[in-house]
Amino acid sequence: MNPIFKNPITDAESQYFWQAANEKKLYLKTCNNCQKPHYHPRTHCPFCFSTNTQWIEAKGTATIYSLSTMRRVETPYTIAYVELHEGPKILTNIVNSTPEQLQIGQAVNLTFQPSENGQLIPAFEP
Ligand SMILES: [Zn+2]
Image (cartoon, rainbow, N blue to C red):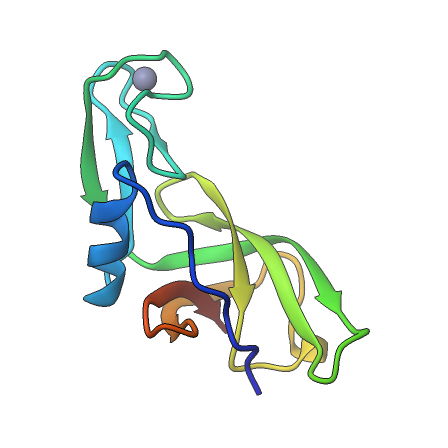
């Protein structure tokens, strides 16, 4: 069982990101100045503060960097930092699995889960 996700907070900066999520695409921003991709999407590159950034579509493969299981709830669920193929680490939910099936270093793939209002949210599964 997967948790019901709360609606994400969307703003002008992340609007494109959430629209893409509804098409089951995970977009990152990459910096045209220092060439480093980053997440969350921002107007300014967090590494060099350049505003010369562009959207790129993430491949959707990642490995679990750290994980934490919430057990004091009816349906335990796992949140994790996963390291994307492109480099950035993102905080996400690991779904379609039980906590016992998950470990650090494990390969996971992008999937999407609807939130309460139907907005699709990026998540990962083994
Ligand atoms: Zn940069």
